[in-house]
Image 1 (cartoon, rainbow, N blue to C red):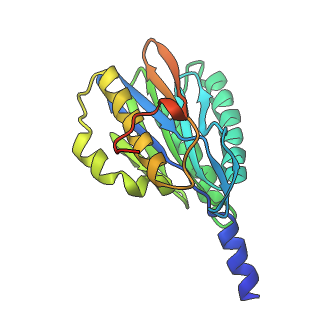
Image 2: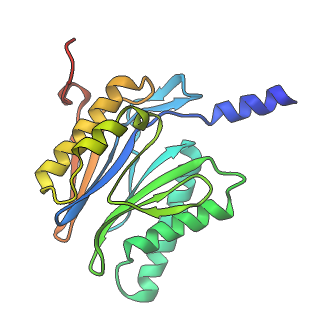
Length: 216
């Protein structure tokens, strides 16, 4: 019985790199595109982990892909209903709270964590972490997934809260490139979304166009 349980736990261990960072006037959220099984076998190189849950609210997912997709699908439904009832776009904190509640109520069954980021009229650009089990934390910049262990030093050294849009986007691309270059289960392309009051810009950087920081 113990061996079966161990195998089940190992089966939901997957690799990814996700991040979000606020800048002066908006927020950047992004991830790699590789999905793996058991942290060893790469099952897909083209998974989009940056999910739009409302007009100016996105989330990145890590952990079990099936669990994360189920939660984001439910969150989209709740946010759409909330928007109709309130007759106004939902706040970013509302989206993060819905994800938190879904994760907490199902914490015994789910193996998924999220970063929620977006912009609203009340609080501007925001980033929230919804960790495994349903904890909710607000941070100006955050990283997650197996690849994040390689870039904590870079993020601490390079992130500045008053960066311009261009500086923050390059910071996010550099961080993803560093993680994808070192974590064997993070990779593919870098998918990013830049969210501001004026709208959303999607940015995709192919793997062969990512910056490099070492000699081949």
